[in-house]
Length: 500
Image (cartoon, rainbow, N blue to C red):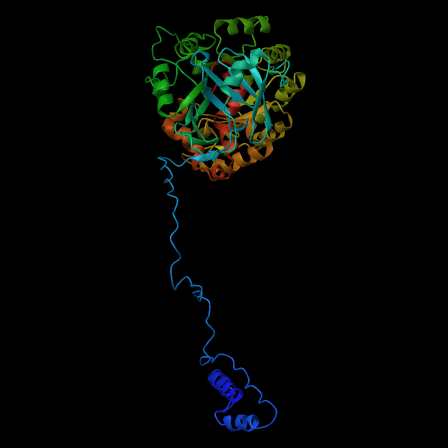
């Protein structure tokens, strides 16, 4: 055998092994290959077989991602949770509000102890020494500006206003993330305000009141002689200064206005004694005397007897028969009261309708003088609080008509004199609603008519009677405040002595 054939066989055998690895070639093909080898032409090389492939297998997949676990299938990896501090537990339910001129209304202790107390009333702040500064809300939630009455709110704050600025240095900034560890507390006479992180919380105290109408006397006739003996059943010591101040403490009566009782005539010794003993709490109203020669001189002399005189009462039955309150003396008394800043209380005991014309003449003669109609205008007669009585609707109608004079106010007082039902006299609720609609709460003021009120109920029941009326639930907080103390404080200037 030639070398070529040996080489051919050798090549064939070499390729055969390779071909055998090709799954596309049949095992019966070798004869065809031999036939081709016997021809003149060189035998074609067997097709170069691809390396034998392993049986087809599934393509090797990349590491298969685990299917997304559904929440119920496998819990997600735990994350580090922030541990939140539990909110502090408040001992009392508190109302949250932002500091503003409106929420600052009331009486506060200055941050500088030597400056005493200050009060915020309307748009002004007044100090214990009587100085007054104006307030202005710079923008909601930012803070308050303070200025003097003559040059308010200048960019460069006058030095004279610095102490007012100190008192109102708590601002309405947005709450910060970091909690103030030691909150600032401002003690108020009408409640407590706590400022934390720019927010303020107020814890309300019992509602404070000013009793705008009461009388005081003592059984000690030797020390304080009577011109007329007081009712015997009320002369048991209940109407003394000491007894009433105790009742004030028990019922949260902050201040009270003592009207000179008929028992002492024009002798004001006992009322002056009351104001001497309690100058920050008790104030006085004297009774006009139409018999004086010089009304102005007489009135000024009474005012000089004590700083706490705040008003004068017109009793039409003190005028001579046939004369009315609008005579020359009455007009002079009325005008002088306006000049001296004294509100005039009117006591139409037999019904307002009998004196309404006189009163209107006085109102037209001097618009500066403020007027207070006592005891709802006495629209139930007789006004003794006992026995058979009838409604004097003419007096009620005239009372409502007087609302057209802005200087006229009405005392919501002596409930027992104008109601036929027993305490707490809920029949008066509808009448009060009418007065609210016509006068507005800023012209209404509550008074007890102590000690006469105690003939029908305890003083505490007289104090809280209005709270049992249906109208009470309909009234706003501002309406209640006006009736219970704000109107009285404004009319009688009680804030000038010690702010509420």
